[in-house]
Length: 307
Image 1 (cartoon, helix red, strand yellow):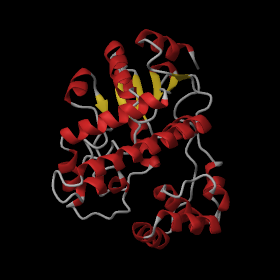
Image 2: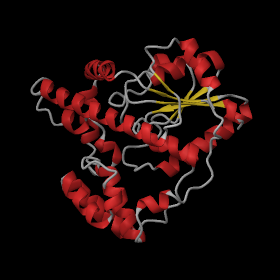
Image 3: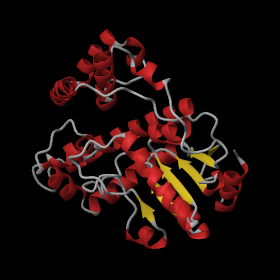
Image 4: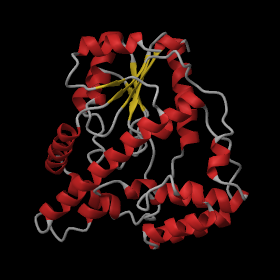
């Protein structure tokens, strides 16, 4: 697909990137393609703020809610799904807007996917069982003993990536950092328009709190309970979505709700901070725009201007 047919919009959670994508899609007839690792799961509609009925009516959306929560969806599989979607859009002559907050997805798109050898299944099973039971700081200490350079790059609470790093070093004898340096061919050309939305932190924090209140009103508690009732492994990515554990364990719809929401909001703010750190470190050459300081027309102009 020609580079000018693809636009990339990244940003932290609640930054307004999905609304921007839909508005741009209305103007261009583009497909909106998901680049968020949690919005792929069918069981997580409300808790991941997936595009609602109004947005779906305004623009075609792809790769949202197409994976079951029992499936540990990977970056490699997402990249394959995107490649298929881009080929279909090319055949139809339609532009594409890739939008989301998962920095690893954007890095894989624009810099290629690291060629990590297959992970030994016995190692994977053992470490994921450990991750389901052990505190994050214990896993982090184990990683520091095996791969200190990788441990320096991960927070103790990021159990999913810590587990992945442990799987790689134990299966291959080399750090994930080594394999990340062995990248393949990027799927998206450097000339494709791209942007990172970077709103002021205070504004973003207020948006996060307001959005979680909206999630509660839209049925987040029931959604969390339905997912928890499936009895899936807590090590699965979908089970680690913010709000699943906190809301599913409420004794009733009211008891402890305020405290649970407060915890979820705090976790979401921490997650947004990690996203912003990744964007600065890994997507540092992307234009950064404050969605509050720019009109839609200025944003479109910026997207078209910057390589």
